[in-house]
Length: 130
Image (tube, rainbow, N blue to C red):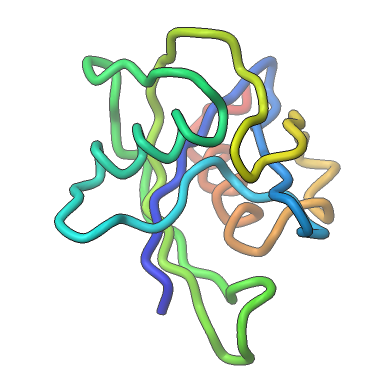
């Protein structure tokens, strides 16, 4: 089981997703915690590394946890992804291992890795997509 954190950011009813270098599907900004990191430390570090923005700790909120098959991992691997929302400061731009940013609508679900699809459904069920 891969235990990861992800930032859910919605713009005009679409969810922000990223394409990491060498990947065929889109993922949410975020990733694995480093040893001893809590949710806030992990998500703020990952988003800074991937998108060059700073999340606002005063607006940091849990959205929920999704479970899905892990994409591009050995067979039977699964992901537990804790999803969070937060406002940010700065200009979103790909950095580190991220090559592309994209806003994805419900009609573009097939562009997302399974856990990101589950997060899109979670955002919709939470009323974030409008």
